[in-house]
Length: 235
Image (cartoon, rainbow, N blue to C red):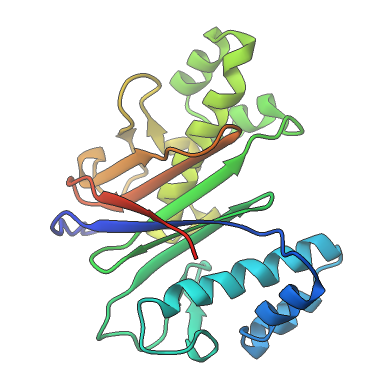
């Protein structure tokens, strides 16, 4: 896989709540969605999941409309083979974006220079830590986690998990990628130590931990060795 090394970019990060105030708000966001998104929303069994999907995709469209000369409902979105979304026919503006949501939090990363992968994780003790560690973490990551005091294990787990997910989303391969091979430093500045074959070496990518509220972990991955400038935004 050839990894481009573009100039250092500015990545806009939009952190948004998904808790719509009332039913009218949800309907307003739903009106922005295309027919495929509306159909998918109806397939959710839990009302909470449906509302979060509608609000997250409605807000995504509002965010993208700030970069494009189009109303949010007119933006033509599609997905790559493994699900990464993109704007159809946007050769002029070159908008690259990625979204992640966890609990009632939405994170959208937008760049006009390079691909971007973002992830956000609400800390959740319902996770079977040992099972996920055995399947998705490298030996060194598991070993370090087990040396930590109990009070520090949760933050470490979700910090590394967000890093892994941000890389997976940057390359757009979803579950096809073995995240156990996405290994990052357990101490010091955020950086990759090794990556799956075919995706370049660790120095071909920049990894940043995000400064978020307590109980949240987030990460950003972009191609190239130049760490991007981050600008946090809100609707």
